[in-house]
Image (cartoon, rainbow, N blue to C red; front, side, top):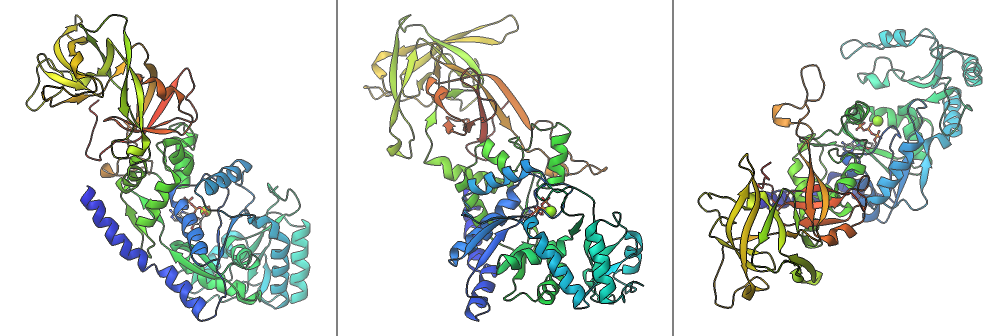
Length: 564
Ligand code: ATP
Ligand code: MG
């Protein structure tokens, strides 16, 4: 795995050095097309952002930063049906968390409605737009398709005066939704269907979250977006591939509206991940159907979910850098995201002891009421993190899988007669176990060697196994949540009826875990390595002082599987 990742890294470095957007920008700067760089991230506030948006945010922000330019956050809130204040707030928080600093440049497309209206009037006056009375269905029929050219609307040749009057009346609320639209007058025979007199304004008697009832006409995306970019002096309007065919219309709008130094659109491929759900539509459905615990359920890849799961902005930046920018759609292996969070946490986080599937271990020759503290290093690879004192006593919890009555070959943990190291504490020799009437092990017994304090013997005796433990008396009980991918790519992401093929094991809740007392001090989002079990973080929603909840961010090795 590590080798594969190194190869991916090398390959991606090459891609990064050839990033075609950077090449375009450098060409534009060299040729004097622009004398600065200005980018933007334009989310529609109709859901939470996901990992794909993170790529777009970091790409736009990164480009601005690289070329000494500026980066704007602009809500593309021209569509009054879906926008919600809740989404606006979450998007702002996510962009900030990712470190894409938009400073004081937070904008709303709806603030430009007046200017967009003026642009429309300007086009009418130039004879480049007309009011059309065809119904939506007729417009579709007249449009033609890839094989057939479109037919001109019978309203196409209305006079400028009549168009101005009708458009004014549309604005004044004289017409019902759908009764009239404003269309650009371009070319019904264009091979590009987007250029066949597209609708640029529609009547919609709807309240808008920002402008209230001020408007009952709203601009269409393809008309509004280039104007928003031009108003903000965006130079490079970076968007995803599905807008490639819309670029001629984008260019038409900024040209015909006669913006000086107009922006240009550059498309790149969307980021897709295997085994996860990135489409807003699907995530929304999972939330609405109650299959997940909100938009920030740690099994999702919304930014809020990744944060709750324990991902860091650094790990997401590393991921986006490794993936690079491409012009062709492809899916990235989810394992790459996991690799990035492991890399980020590896040297930063303390390695703590937590027992997820406990069985009691009694050290029969340890004094009944005695407790002591042993010193345990916080991170074996990074001595700078120092060490901590961990309470140790006669009764401990160990992982159930660390004891076997009849061990298989190469099992070096606890079995009768075998000596192991209790991590950071002493050598202990297993003496047997107790069982219930069903044959389940209830208590494991051992004796310890007081001469081996610190975990090594003075007589040079070696042990092959080291196991982690938590002292029963001071242990804190905790809930640990383990995750698997929410959809199973190998079995197909979608069922025949188009619904998601969900993995029934995507969440495992372990209610009776024991952790060392220091872990009770963790605050929301704090993360730790739990010896052998992976990286975990304190759940920001459900964890309290009395009921600790940890989310597993990722296991330690991709090949590593906890048997449950
Ligand atoms: P979804 O399809 O997931 O609902 P969207 O494209 O509707 O997303 P918007 O809010 O319209 O979401 O997008 C904001 C910006 O994010 C756009 O510039 C869009 O191109 C970009 N974006 C959306 N999804 C991805 C993705 N998977 N990878 C990269 N960029 C993306
Ligand atoms: Mg969208």
